[in-house]
Length: 467
Picture 1 (spheres, rainbow, N blue to C red):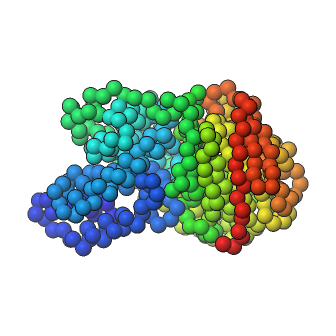
Picture 2: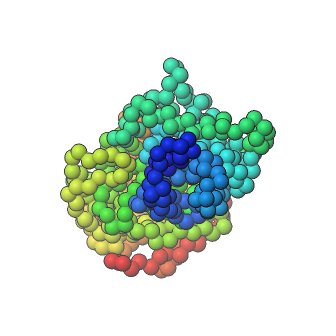
Picture 3: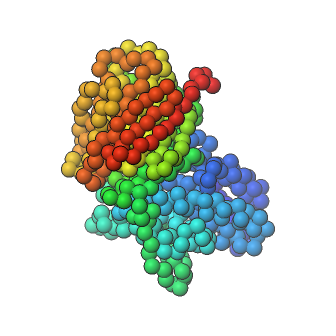
């Protein structure tokens, strides 16, 4: 869509062939992707990822500059720039202190293209962030990759994240795909005396202090911790699908957790079932259920904590072979189970994960933690109620971040009890871990007591089944 808008705008500027009908159509399609608070979906599904920044904000900023003075562009300018202003502070809060972007969503091989929305802000003259904040966010993303072997020893960008890692590719990826990373250097189009070059870099949100945000459009809870510089997203709204649609969970979108320090399991086991950052029922064959198609129930912030709830019907899928891979889950032969209500109360590096199975089920419940490299960040799942059995799984060559990946888990004892609240403390920390929180669940609310004595109350949602 934006390729055509930009190309036709150029052709028009040099007297070449262009179509007003095409332009109007594509601009209208762009409007259909608009969501709350400056966010865009990557298409009609619940697809929230880096495309919101490196495409659906970046191209409008470039186009407004290309089409300056054009009646249609001037009509849209205020609207486009207001959305960019709303988006940029949220985007900055999603960058880790080491410049790492979230390892979430498709086309990750574009790497430092994740800096594009900050350059778009500078190009468009946004005041939502200062020039020093824009520069810090953009240069931080570039430095993250430069410090980790990008480009490679031949000066090239292979398919991968830090080094070469072919499983990161989607079906549309090719050897030239990594060069969309050029968007991360779009600031070079700015003159040397631009404020973004003259300004001193200013700290990212996670460098200034802990971050606690709820982002309604993607359905994310954001927790950044200054002590280790990690930004975590707990996901109750994104699955690259539609509510009520029974497909496999895409590891790029449907996991409960994403961060700037971890990657979901993107090798074949992670596409077959959710083995990291998840909540699943295990069937008689030991297969884990999927959550894609869930419904978001609530998101909120209270003090320095945030909370979210979602519900979805547990289902198992035998995928049909030969489906194109654009990041979505896979369709196939479906077996359904009971509704599973999942809640998260998040503060700092800890998430209190609450689970209630709404109907009877003849199998156990499994809660899995963050996928980490051995000897790296600490990943724990502790029992806060009903999950006494513990263990961990080690998966080789599972992510672009490390040769092996370890994932802790907790499982209920025996069969799941209908209507009971199960609770786990889920930790991801690059600093020495604090003591786990405790939780007390009442009829209509939960109260979490954190290690420092602070308490957080979250109302439990009323569930209307079938609506």
